[in-house]
Image (tube, rainbow, N blue to C red; front, top):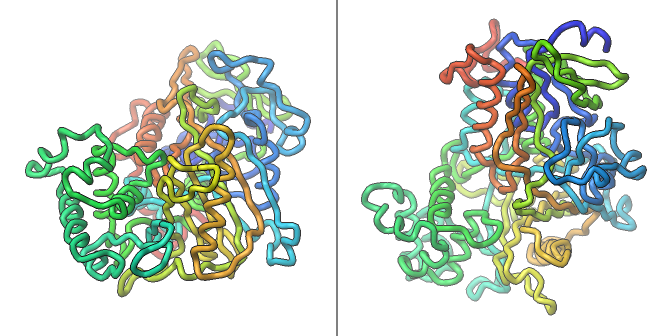
Length: 535
């Protein structure tokens, strides 16, 4: 530890979330002196993948309004210092941290375990890897392009995302409650549950979306760009309620009120992503814990490039140095100096929306949900089920205006043992603390709708908000402090978050930053496609 203070670091990166880890990847060939820290004893920060034991401790730490953060700079504007104290209960469940501002991104977390969980098949804690960020990644995502250009893609095993289903009380034709959304010409015309006239209407819309941004099609929608997509679907395409539910589900909107502009953009991305990496699927998911796996690959690249890594290492800003450096105090009172400090924002914005998420382990493979989508297509490991607003009504009218999405993961994701599944249910947080009840109802309804028996073995519930959506950049003398925004709440990866990574990279690289060199690396000498460059 003492040797760390012998030099001034070009940058100290606090936290191993996706943004910080992609920055580490971007800097891995820069020959900069980089110290990468995390107060947690696991990688991933807001996007971590947790064993059951880690999930229990994490939930205990975030049972209230949040957990103490690893970087002490200053209290957020308007934050009460008396509210920034971690309870003794919290201190027992997380790695010891120096005093600092409280993270309020996650809150109200709790776990439930089946009374006879082990007898019903719950395995040992590390047999599970529950993702805090189970986002799917469309094949046209810029993230995938950057993983390819940086050669990091070889270290990630991507799995296909399969069918998108919509739940309804009953399907008049087939009698099923889960209807698969057709998203290609072949799908539409082979769908037995859609009448012939509706098929022609749906095909008309799909053709329009493929070319929606052309000069010919823009006049049709630009006048309605900021109006609800649901109204546009009726006014211009005469889609019935059922087909509208299909289209809205493809947008993965959390509030059900997606605009025409955003909805068309999202559906266009979905449709044009189909077949890019193989027949039948439009998105992928990284094995072993989703986004967390990409974060670990970025950190591995940073380590190979010469960065120094320290987990379980709290840090706090000590002072701004006279020479334009920042002094950071680590564990055991050791201080290091850096000219650039990178971290992530931990305080929820006062205008932030919030999502509620329920992660459930089920002792069934739920096999009927994982059918192959097209000839030659891979067996999917993830499938999506949408519960439209109003579809989960009970006698208390819970959830009547809020859609719920279930991402069902098979054991092929590496997140649970063979013969089991992990279900991630997400909705916009609703008042009166009833979101957890709605998600429980959705989970029960899903298991009843799938013709397969299954018991719920373990559940993790939490609520997640966002910080400011802008990066925060401040100066301390000649030194710079940069804070990434917290992750997007979207169910599909948001490429806009990559802009902040490039912004931070330019700050660290200074005059050496060339736009055309960002995330673009040649193979290391002596390496080829079959080599594991980061082992």
